[in-house]
Amino acid sequence: MRVRQQVWLWLAQRVSAAVLAVCIVVHLVTMIYAVRGGLSAAEILARTQGNYAWFAFYTVFVLAVSIHAPIGLRTVLAETLGWRGVVVNMLTLALGITSALAGMRAVLGVFS
Amino acid sequence: MEKRAVDAARLSPRLKPEARQTSQTNSLSVRVWRGAEEGAYQTYEVPRLEAQTVLDVVTYIQRVIDPSVSYRFSCRVGVCGSCAMNVNGQARWTCRTHVEKVAADGRLEIAPLSNLPVIKDLVTNMEQFFDKWARARGRFNGALTRNDDFARVMPDSPKRQQVDAGIECIGCGVCYSACDVVQWNPDYLGPAALNRAWTLHNDVRDISHVERLAAVSGDAGCHACHTHTSCSERCPKQISPTIGIAGLKRAVLAAAIDGES
Image (cartoon, rainbow over all chains, first blue to last red; front, side, top):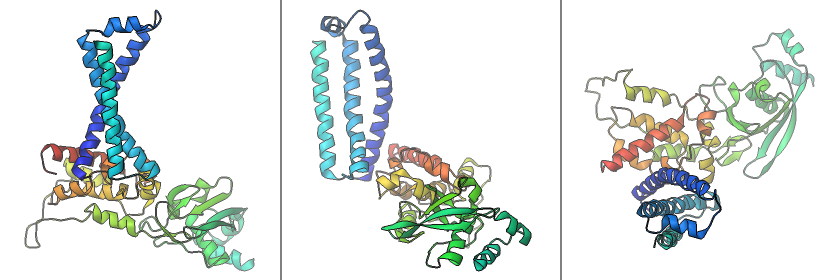
C-alpha cells in the first residue's frame, strides 16, 4: 500500500472516530431514555419506522463504524500478530464492507 | 578485597579520602545482563558510595570485579549520550542517574537498551537507530552556498521556537528504547528520527520539506505513533518528540490537502 493511501486511512480513522464520539453519546442517551418503561420491539419500531432523522443518524453511525473498525483492526493485527500486507488489507476491507452491508440492512429493517 | 577498596576510591574522585571510607556503609546487589540476545543476568556485589551513579557501578564491576563485562560510555557527564541503558526497567543515561534515586532498596538491574540488537552485555548495535534518521531525511539540505550571505532567522519566530524545542537531541536512544510502537512495528522510524525531521521541517533554510514529509508519513512514520508519550517522559533532555510527531501529522495533512505529497 502506498504511503499516500496509508495517510488517508489514518485520516479516515480520525474523522470517523470524531463522528463515532457523537453517535455513541446519542445512541446511549437514547437507549437509557427508551428503556425507562421497558424495552419492546414495538416501541423501537414506533420510533424509527418512517423517521428520516433516525434513518440518517444510524446510517452515519453504521458507516462510521464500518470505516473506523477495520482500519483499527488492520493496525492491531500488524502490531500484535505481525500480520501485514495485501491479505490483511483485503481481509479488513472485507470486514468493513460486511459491516456496512449488515448494518445498513438493520437500519433499513427498522426504518421500513 | 583491599585492592577493590582502593579501586573504588579511585573511581570516585569527587569524594575526599575520609569520605570514601565513611560513605561505604553497605553494598549494592547489581544484576547485569550478560550475553547477547540470549543470555542471563549475573549478580555482583558492589560497594555503595555517596554520590554514586549507575555508570560508576558498571565501571566498578568492569574494572574491579569482572573485566569481561562490556558497556559503552564516553563523556560521563550527560553530553555524549553513549551510556544509555535500562536501569530497573527504565531507559536512562547511567552517567546522570544517581544510585540513590533508583535503588532505594539497594538493588539494581542493568540491561542493554530495548528495541535494539544486543552485541554483548550492555552494548547495543545502534545501526538501525541511525539508519532511520537517514530514512527520515534527517540531514539538512539548504539552497545557499558559501558565497551567499548568512540566512537571517529570528530567534523569536514561531518556526525557530519549534526548532529550539527539539534541537538538543543527542541521539542517545533512550526514547527509541522506551517506545512501544518501535517494539510492535520494527519499521517504525521512532521518536528521535521523527523529532529530527520535525526540527528540519521548521528550518526555514531547508528546501526538502515535501520530500521529508513523504519520508516520515504512513504506517512506518509519524502516523503510527499512538501518543503513549513514553519518549517524552523518558527523554533526558526534556524534549517532547510527541509534540514534534503531532506537528508532522498536521504538516502531512496540510500538504496532502494542498496536493504536495
